[in-house]
Length: 80
Image (cartoon, rainbow, N blue to C red; front, side, top):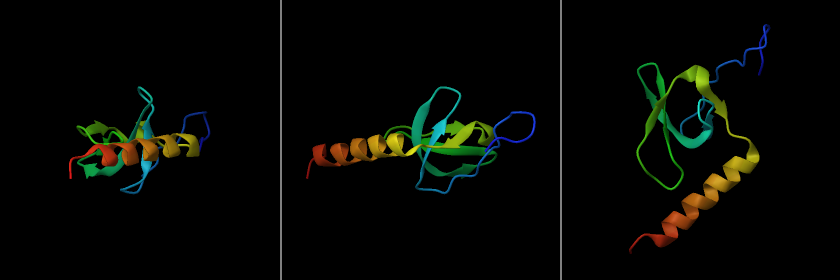
């Protein structure tokens, strides 16, 4: 959503959903909040990173699909 003045409005994504860090375009699964930051984890695992809430946007459907495929592929590669 864009507010008056042309600046995108910060969103508060739900844990478990995918979001985009607009600072660099990375997509991550929302893990929660720590202090003022939203914590995102790359699809398929990896280190979480902190993102200011004003830099988080909901991931569009195409990026969500790509992220889910990455996670499923990663799960298939894990030793059993």
